Length: 380
Image (tube, rainbow, N blue to C red):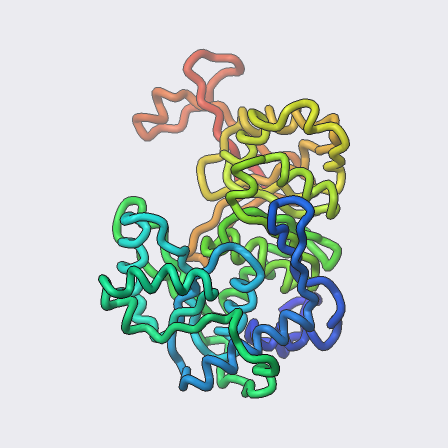
């Protein structure tokens, strides 16, 4: 596959075993509970132990070639349970705890489509979901498992699963913004291949500490900020999306504190930092370690990139770190991007012509110009 992992590794389950054997004490993930200084940290050995405990609990209930909903708030238990599913040969189905009728409808739609047998969550969420279960039989039919209540030593009962690179790792559901959410089957070999694409595109190695605030049930958050550090043997630092939205400076402080090399999100995240991070909050930030500031999942605006680079240049941010990229669940995640620390390209086009499905390059400074941002290595 690459120089990063042995060519014999064909699944993420095998990858985790290998990481835990060659770098057991290295930090795998740090979760910032309050978005700042309250840390929860797992080494690769601790993640391996947690994963095998969850897998053993699933195996005790007869799990084999099944599917399991992951219903978690952001945190390490989500990650341990995701790998626990893989270690049991169970396909994970990441979802988010329902907050209202709309999100509950999405959850029920996914259950109907995915036909999971298990629901993995924490004790507190389990209690809240029970209230819904009395009304919605789809929830009641699932086998529920609170992973934070597993008995000590559960991991000793684990048995290696019979899976290959062609086994399904998880079901990634589309947003459902324009239609019913659709599940994309992601195989182990798909994930390993895409992680290698990300590694090459970003120019990553084991020193590439990744900082993320994206939802873990979303492919960019899961594949880009959870699985990429695992693939590299690097350190992943995570916080809840709510922590970032409440105080955007928390994202930048985490990059500064942990010397983040890779971090990013949708365009709105960069725009929010420009608007909300006050001059006095920028004091003391050091963003010079940030080499890949990826921007994707929604239209990338040239003016946002310019304003962000200008706003945080005094804190050591380098404009060349801006990395517009494009991905989609149907391609696992990463599809196109540029080169590490190479400035992105833009093209000014006539906005009126663009509305008529024509691309006409506009003269510099011309009225009615729309600036497009490239998400590749550029053009001649």
